[in-house]
Image 1: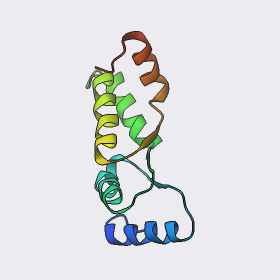
Image 2: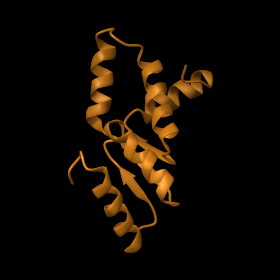
Image 3: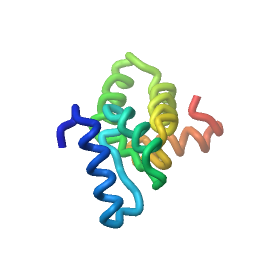
Image 4: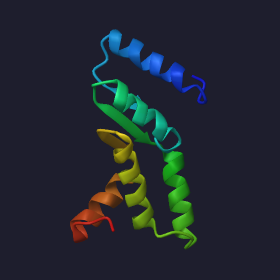
Length: 108
């Protein structure tokens, strides 16, 4: 699929739903937040977003060099994906986020 052609993506989603799909997934999540938003507005089905390994690796690399606050950035990423309209997020950050939540009930 052409990553620059959101209309085509929406047509593909509509066709998938017509063929019986119960949900749709958008990946990679960060590069396609606008697609998540449009899918949320157009379709009344669960929207999944896959925060792919490359997005995870960028955060880990920058955090390991002290360029970013990893916990803050992960919170921003996950919040942004949900705010765009995803009902659930598949992410490599899940184990860290769960640990941070257990430790202090917040990702901030």
